[in-house]
Length: 150
View (cartoon, rainbow, N blue to C red):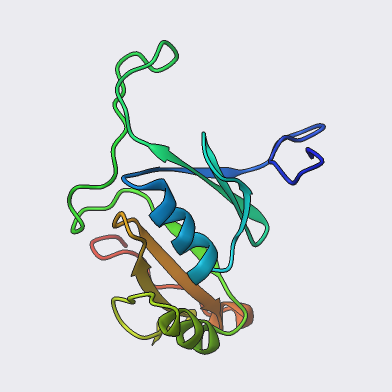
């Protein structure tokens, strides 16, 4: 690992999550002030250590030589999601209270899903974030299969 906490492993790999954001300062504030992350690098790319992982964010842009047919942009339709952060917490009720007091807007309060308690919020760009606390799954009670599957 890099000496300043930057995710650069000496061997093996580290998992980071990249977000294309509209306003780096606004997103940096959300991930630090609301979720409690720590700024590792302010810009280019903004890197936040969040718990035992990292969020890397930069503004969108057009193709580059290493991704010649790809344009990066924040989500445009909050009703359609193909990927989201999944944060696991020890006390979801405390987390919900703390982050709500700091301005987080949850879609619902935590809901008991048998296998876990969970709720969702969005970051300033509309990225969906699941917050979950394992409950039943710790005792062999798992999630129901997705609708339409056996």
